[in-house]
Length: 141
Image 1 (cartoon, rainbow, N blue to C red):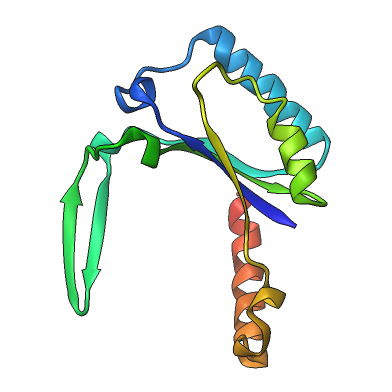
Image 2 (cartoon, rainbow, N blue to C red; image 1 turned 90 degrees about the horizontal axis):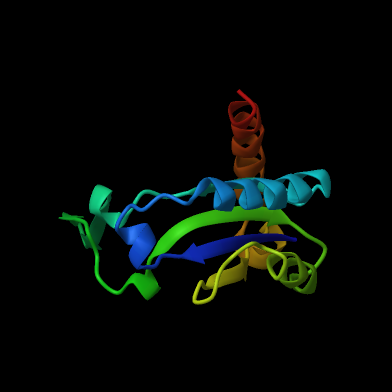
């Protein structure tokens, strides 16, 4: 199963404060352990919302809203995409992450094709497989 591990923003991440060398070293060690275990598929930190936008959809209308955005507890500072055997395995891994007090991380399963049932027709499944095959070489470039 794949899971998205969502690292919640805080005042420091929203202010654009970069981690210390020590924090980067600890996270590097954790990421290395994830890679060696075959868990980590992707992962990155995100710039503060002051550098981003939101796009609101209302029928055919599109409205672009410039950051920053309020309520840091609702914002994302970074993410991982992991391949694990179960949600319990993901929980055991995230408990080892080098975060400090007050940090919050959310772990959510990613939908797989079988989750969509008959609504994902054979033609749509084939389309998804073709897109995945095209994406694969791009992620290794």
